[in-house]
Amino acid sequence: MLEWKQEIAKRLSAANLRPEREAEIIEELSIHLQDRYDQLLSDGATHQEASRQVLAELDSTDLQAEMRDAENTVRQNLLPAGAAPTGRWLSDFLPDVRYAGRGLRKSPGFTAVAALTLALGIGANTAVFTIINTLLLNPLPVEKISELAAINTTQAKLTTQSGELQLVSFLNLKDFTERTHSFSSLTAHSNPMTITMTDTTEPHRIFLEVVTANYFDTLGIHPFMGRFFLPSEDTTPGAAPVVVLGYAAWQGRFDGAPDILGRTIKLNNTPFTIIGVGPKGFKGIYAIFGPDVWVPSMMSGQIFPAQQANALSDRAIPLFTGIGRLLPGVALAQARAELDIVAAALQKE
Amino acid sequence: MAPTVENEWKKGSAELLILSLLENQPRHGYDIAGLIETRSKGALHFHVASLYPLLYRLEKRGWTQGRWVEKPNQRRRRYYRLTTEGQRVLGLQRRKWLEFAGAVSRVAGVQNA
Image (cartoon, rainbow over all chains, first blue to last red; front, side, top):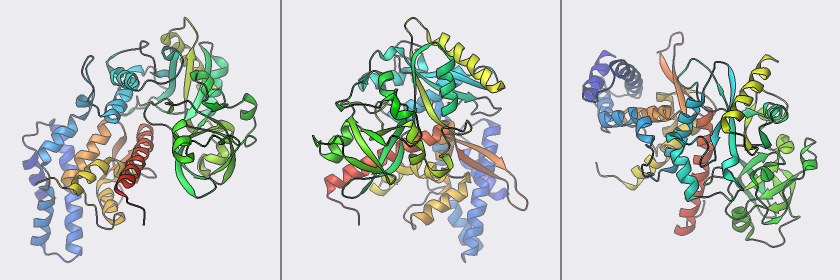
């Protein structure tokens, strides 16, 4: 093992890593090399052949440059205000969200934060710069975007990831809805998830989001065709198997069929009736990535995998992000303070 | 070493491969490298010098979290797990991959076997 450590140390000598970080990397890589060496021996290689092969693999890439680049990842991905976007949307966007989440972390314990604003003015800072640019380049067809805020939680822990944004359980979001007064409307949506859709021909893998009935109303968007969900369709689990198609899915998967409304498709083998088509250009709140279809939250049991089937009744299964529309005159900081109070109360209950 | 088409494709899909392997359970680097090789039936190899910088990048971005684990009669190892943020990224990257592969197939006239 010592031999491997020396070989790795030689190759990292000019990488200018912090000594303790360099030592950790050397230890991890040396274990890998020893595993590989042992494997080659068990496959029949001689000691000399195995050593030569392991060192060749260690030199297959410029380790020093790669490590230096990797260790600088966060700094390189955070754009200063006013800098030009790199065009690497995903790699720019998500670290910034994480950075924003860290900045919002407050007291230990369970806290709720109005974390990711879709606003162009609220909470603007360096961390959301690339978000803003993305949305400017891909404007969402929603009303008064500056009033919208996303609601995630943070779970304070003694780790480097303690500020990361977490999804929220359905029940916690329900309590946030009932106990806060900062929002005119508060909705919840899951992340896009892959499911199997079967129409009249064959199965396809598509992306779906589970949302509360007021999702589209909260965003202030209107259907291209048909309608969105009614409150009555989101009150009883499993009672209303209805689905809204995204405009692109309607065009791409159903050839823009004008008689699409009322058709039945199967989602994970459950028949759903198509009641509407979303507006052109709307791909969910992430602007670029989004689902092909939306279903009401009360159909979660038919959509989520078995281990998450109780997502509507179990606070330990966080699968949703909240989206709130701030009341006129309510600042994001006020809403965050109110959410913190509710979250603290929930923690004690 | 001149870049090849295969290398460029591998580079483009590397994050997705690793995040996918961490979806259901934490894994250490050697395990990840072995699974990529066996599940791709030998078509894809990630050697130590390319794998670990990638693992560290994913961790720096907050998509994975690593921690040292000691088990009886085994070498101390660093296991990586997917964070909530990583799960979200995995979903997004899967979608983009499907879209990309589908687009290339449509243009190139390639169909699934």
